[in-house]
Amino acid sequence: DMLYRDGSGLQRLAKGTAGQIIRMNSGATAPEYGTASSDYVKLASVDDDNVGASGYNFTNCFANATYQSYQLRLNWTNTTAQTPRLTFLDSSNNELAGSASYKRAGGQAYRQYPDNADDTLTTWSNAIGLTYADLTGWNHSSGATHVQAITVDFDMPYPNSSNHKTFKTNGWGYSTGNYLFYNWAAYVYTGTGAVTGFRFKNGGGNITKLYATLYGLKK
Figure 1 (spheres, rainbow, N blue to C red):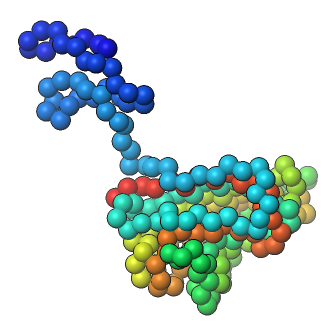
Figure 2: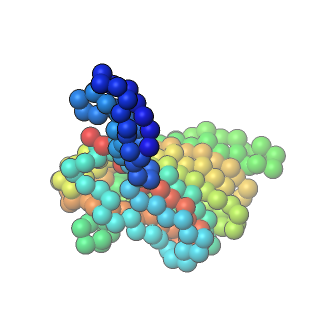
């Protein structure tokens, strides 16, 4: 408990519950305990050292009513040197592949890390579209300690509508042939169906370790 002074003298404020903060009440006349609010909200997470599957679904995480945009922060290792991919899911958690529905344009920088050979800055695109979003364009190293990283920003205020869906990525990590790379890209999904989640997957082989968190930014 704590004491505070108002116009009538000392007053007692009983202790709050775990995790609450002290704030001013709505009338700005006295302190009170309440739950802290945030416009940046953790929606889903996974921390798994033994996934043993080719992909992982984030289900029922997109909604029209609450969030303007979303951010995924992702690290993983894999058993086979393949490219990481993303597809949207419908309300039944089926993958939305479509026909050349995932358009991409972006760029990359890479070099061989033992000797700085093959130092390159270039652009790439799949503007004609694929049936999935190719998140890096690289065959990531399959080393057990070679953790790769991607951030995905989904700018989708109405994911359950027929609007096209847009997102962008930044990725970095190791590739086969001792390459260290960094890439960036923008994507448009031109399918008109509602999306409620997404699937992160390998182009081949299994994901071994997966550490990921999805956040939502409120409207």
